[in-house]
Length: 124
Image (tube, rainbow, N blue to C red; front, side):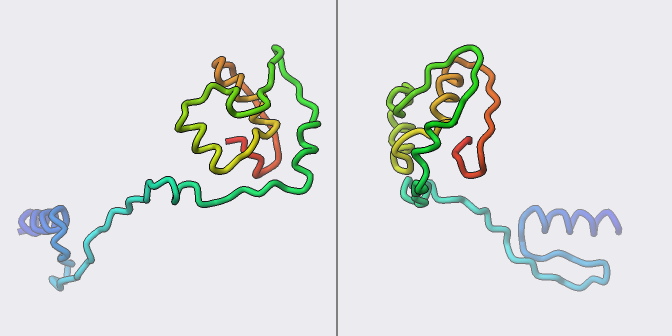
């Protein structure tokens, strides 16, 4: 009898019939499981607008150490990115941050990098 009860419970659960049986033989209703599917439209992905802080330009004077020498990019167009990637970046950013200026060329060359910058400085 135990095996039959287990098979009934298993069948009901897997079929998502919304009914599970407890050990006291009472029926418990469970709503069907809904799978969350996030929106993939460009408008929803890039809703957040990043505003430059008052001192953003001063970050371009930040000292940077790199070995071997890396020629930083000044504009995203210099990164040889796919048109769609560049378009998506342009929706949010006008120019690369100092971290991006130096790391994008390193990444394109498949070099290892270690970068440190304050939170919210677009390291990702």
